[in-house]
Length: 280
Figure 1 (tube, rainbow, N blue to C red):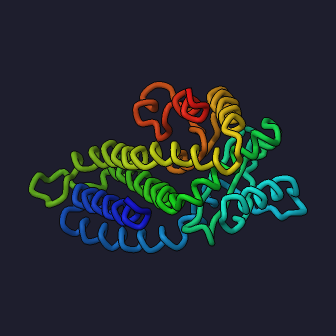
Figure 2: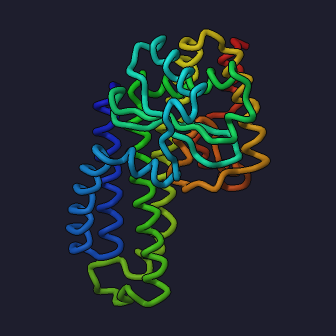
Figure 3: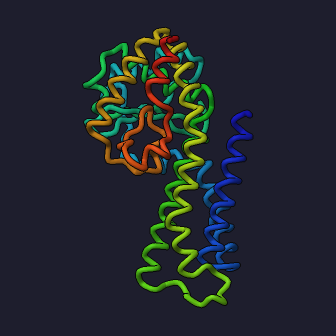
């Protein structure tokens, strides 16, 4: 399935989820409102989702003068990958991690945290950057970025449902065409889970693909494997304070994976990723 079809399927799935949420919260009127909202979201997600994700992540663009070594690495590996050099962003966070975003290779961004620059050596950093360039080369950055944008919107709807219940914003009348309190409860719990499942289905397969592509770009699978091991350990000890909607975009899960969160993990098991890279 190519990236265009995957993007279309994702948008259709998220639109359907919005419409179900609209039905639960407001009946037929809610469906109409949700449909309009979904159309606007689809348009915005395609053209502006990367800016939304960068804003949610509090990332800032850096010039070659501000981060010369990082820019050199991105430039050299981009040439090897045969794609335009993406813009370079940094997230002020001591926990090492990275992600890529954008709608296509001509409008792409690679973002790394300040922590990754201090934790990894140059070869490991090249492995991580190559992985992110793999996402760009494989043209799956638009899909993950749109998924993050929609997941954030669904989380906002769930929060609205929660506050509406607290302040009695929904009718308890069983004859109402909306779902009332039952609909609100379903919206609060089921919609975020559905969004997480969609993200999970998208993210797990693309991480394996980006690992393989990244290893080919940098030419040293062991460097990426070593980097992944360090990132996994550090992020478990010191999870990042990120919007959960954007978690699936990072090279390793930036959130704690314990408890129920592990059931909806957006990343494949790290040991399996490392084993594939090392051919073991």
